[in-house]
Length: 149
Image 1 (spheres, rainbow, N blue to C red):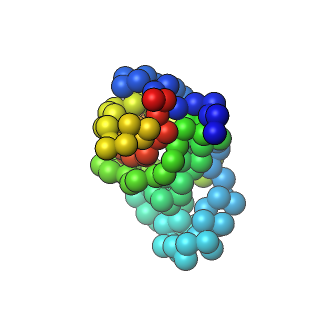
Image 2 (image 1 turned 90 degrees about the vertical axis):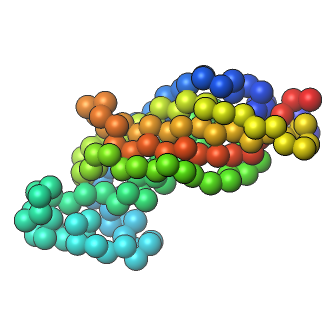
Image 3 (image 1 turned 90 degrees about the horizontal axis):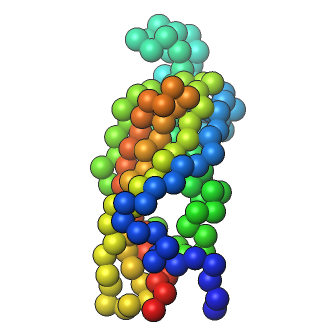
């Protein structure tokens, strides 16, 4: 099969940035319904107004999912990715509120050879930022890639 991209196309240290998306109330409501995560800080306006944040916050796993989606629709990895292998060192560093706009910057951290030279394991650092360029979430995302041999 002819591929458009291979893991070789992503050298350690390379970076790219995705488009952005504005987090809406609909995102929170749909995520709560999909995951059964109805903690009041996410879905109860009156409860959240009395919290130290003063308003509802987006679910952390929702921000993770949006970040993965933004990278996916960027097309940067193309058809090089074989499989997702996990996420590590995830931190939510700043709350995301309804109306915040988030985007992702990705940096290729590492390549690890496998026994099969046509495959490679890579770790990419995702940094999710808001409209003020504040990091709201960071994590390391590990995937297996097709390699040019």
